Image (cartoon, rainbow, N blue to C red; front, side):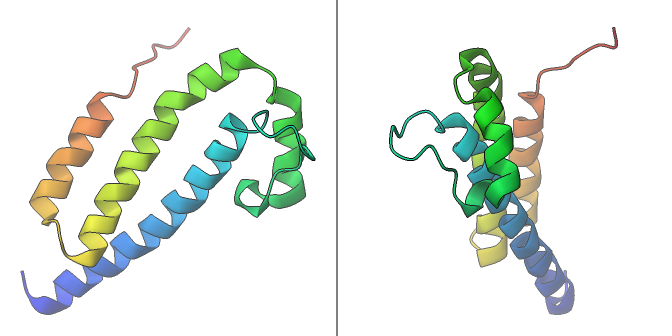
Length: 112
């Protein structure tokens, strides 16, 4: 791979890393909304006021949290992979294989 293409891949990985970081912050806000008995507010990572309204509806629903935890784990792993690719510490092949392994952990849901 030439250097220009490599920089394109690293740039795309950096953009993906930012998006995954936002997704992880929002999911973490939902998962940990009931943990702080303080104000009950959700920070900017959860999308500000809009995110806070959504969280307030489910912040005491343990079933929803249980459903979201595996997604949070997958996002965290993908964030690590995007970080490694953006920083150049992981090869594209290694990231591709690891991302496929993460995708294989995604539960398959059949149409109802």
